[in-house]
Length: 264
Image (spheres, rainbow, N blue to C red):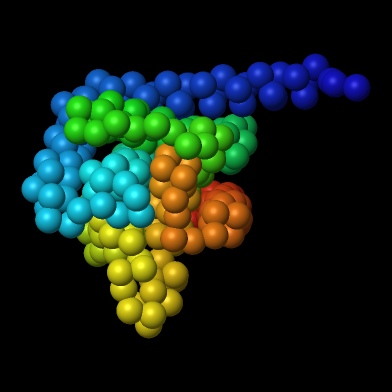
C-alpha cells in the first residue's frame, strides 16, 4: 500500500527529474549555433570529402555505394561526440560552480540526478543524429533495414557515452581535463571504429586488434540496422553494449553516493 510520504517523495523526484532534463535541453537549444550547427557542418564536410570525392575512387563496399556505407558511421560519430560533450561540460560546470552540491544534499535520489544529466545528453545526441540523417538524404538514399535495431543501438550508444561523459566530469579538476578524453581517446577510437572502412580490408592481425575497440561494435550494429550488413555478430555487439551501459551506470551511481563529485 502506498503511503502519503512515499507518494510525496516520488512526486518530488519526478519534478526534480523534469527540472534537470528541461534545464539540460534548454541549455543546448538556447545556444544551438554552438551545439547543433557545428556538428551538422562537420558531418556535411565528411559526406562531401569522403563520400563524394574519395568515394568515387573507392567504389562499392559490401554491395553499397561508399556514400551509403559511411552514412551510418558518420551518424554514430555525431551521436558519440555530442552525447559525451553535453554531459561532461554541463556536469563539470555545475560542479565547478558548486551548484551540484545543493542537489546532492537535497532529498532527491542520486538516480534522478544521474538520469537527468544522461537524458539531456542523449537528447542532444539524438537531435544531432536527426539533423545529420536529414542532411545525408541530400547525398544518398537511405532505407532502414531494421528499425528496431537501429533505434536500440543509437539509444544505447548515446546513453553509454553520456554516462562516460559524466564519469569524465566527476574526475576532471579543470576545464582542460574535460577535453583530454574526447581529443586523445574518443577521436582515435572513432576513426579506427570502422566508420570509413570495413575491417575485412585489414590484415588478420589488425582485424583481431580492432575487435577490442567498442566503437567498432556500435558502428557495425548501427550499420546493420540501416543497411543490413555488418562485419561483426550483432547479438554479441548489442549484448556488450547492454553490459557496458549497466556497468557505467553502477559506477556513476557509486561516485554520486560516495560524494566523489564534490571533490575538486
